[in-house]
Amino acid sequence: MAIVPVGVWRGLVRSLVAPGLDPDLPVTEQRRRIAFATRLLPRPRGVRLVPSAQGDPHGEWHRPPGAGPEHAILYLHGGGFVVGSPRTHRALASALAMAARAPVFVLDYRLAPEFPYPAALDDAMAAWEWLNTRVPGVHRPAIAGDSAGGNLAIGVALEAARLGSPAAALGLFSPWLDLSCQRSASPDAPADLMLSSAWMRACARLYLAGGDVSEPRVSPAHADLADLPPTLLQSTNSERLAPEIEVFVERARAAGADLRADVWPDLWHAWQGLGQALEPARAALDEAGRFLAAAMSRQGQVSQESAPNRVGGG
Image 1: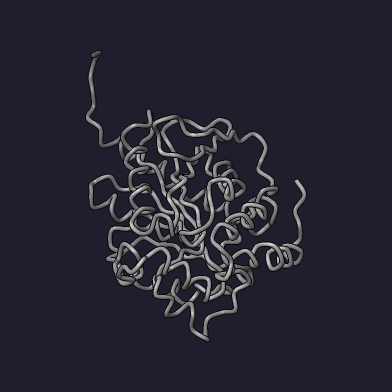
Image 2 (image 1 turned 45 degrees about the vertical axis):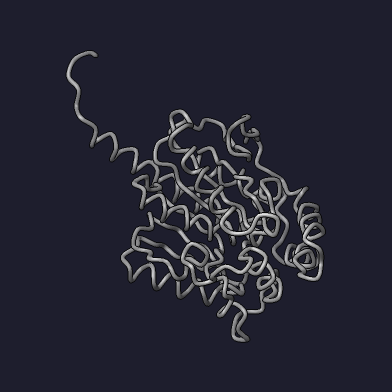
């Protein structure tokens, strides 16, 4: 698979992706442009793309060769709660599935403005409960997400812990943590290649529809983070969200969370979305896959060790 140089991708993101994230465009046009910009991104060979079965949450499975049924990852795509879909994130999800050697389910959750908060979070939580209780063989799956999907992933992880079904691990790619945009829209925030403060504020308005931006389920920056599962957070120092991510990492660690924060230099928001077509994206997803796989394996070993010993048959 050919790897396009970072400089070339930087120009393509600036000319093809960023113009689609324009608050002056109708939402339907934003969705069309992002779908077009991502449609030809390559996926690793051997990963099967399987639509969800009728009656299950709507989405797509990415099934790598040789993966067993016990590990699985729920993936929540980004797009400001307004754009994006499992289709736009196929390159990322397939590369993550291959790296983790585990099936990845990308949820097609409801988008604003047609379905404002809490529709997306409700869908994500329902998918988590389904993955835990109705998918045969799955034990203590992991959760991952980018941008707005990272926001949702944190919400699901915290709610899952509260309900007694904690995730094995959490993978976050440039998560959007504070919908007030107080830090990300500041003049001191990095000049992001992809995200404008105007687009982010517009997405927040559409998603909230008058709701409280300080609600922890809306902005994880305000949540109690003590119950986060083992977490890997990848971001870049060149993205608009960098200041709020830095504060989130400090708060999570102060709360006692097991959080590893990797800052990749001189890239752009959610660069992992290019999958194996960009070397830093491939490397980041390989690292995330190894992290999630190791955490799920540890949970499986703990479960086996804590299970009661059985002597004899029956």
